[in-house]
Image 1 (tube, rainbow, N blue to C red):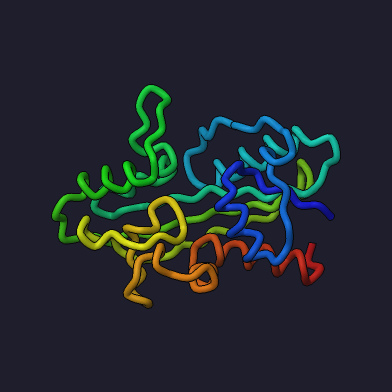
Image 2 (cartoon, rainbow, N blue to C red; image 1 turned 60 degrees about the vertical axis):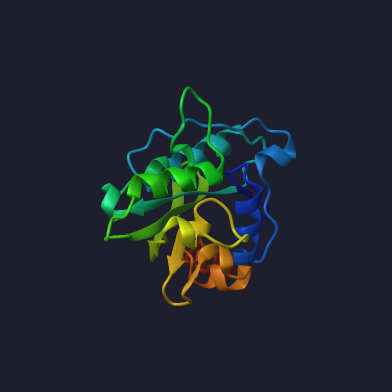
Length: 199
């Protein structure tokens, strides 16, 4: 069974392939134009929007996995949250990951409460009436600008400190990250369904 991943992000594809232990197809690599409008109120809503949008584009109705994830910072009232990928976007122009990280650090300033979490909602859509979903988190905190480091991972990883390792997510190996991450934990729940004939 082919499985599609409703993203054009090759970093996320590589990460989820490692978690699931299998190859995935993504739209951009298969010549499919895919850019659904993420209008959901929460991570699950957006994951389902993406899953259904891609499923409806496929001629052969294979299974689709979609996720929506983001960084929620307590001192910022849970922002950027579902807007993590579009954080700081003005007039349709998206900031680079570095620009988003610096914007968030500047907005957070010297706040003493730096608690934050990554959230991932992941959906496995088998057809228009049957799906499985999992939502997981990774708790941590936001470092100060002088402590931003690491060149692994992507997005907000260089500013997110994982207390268990006393390192940022960007400093962890892929295996370490997949073991503890929000996407790793949600992906493993769906992997258990796929590989243990529970679907």
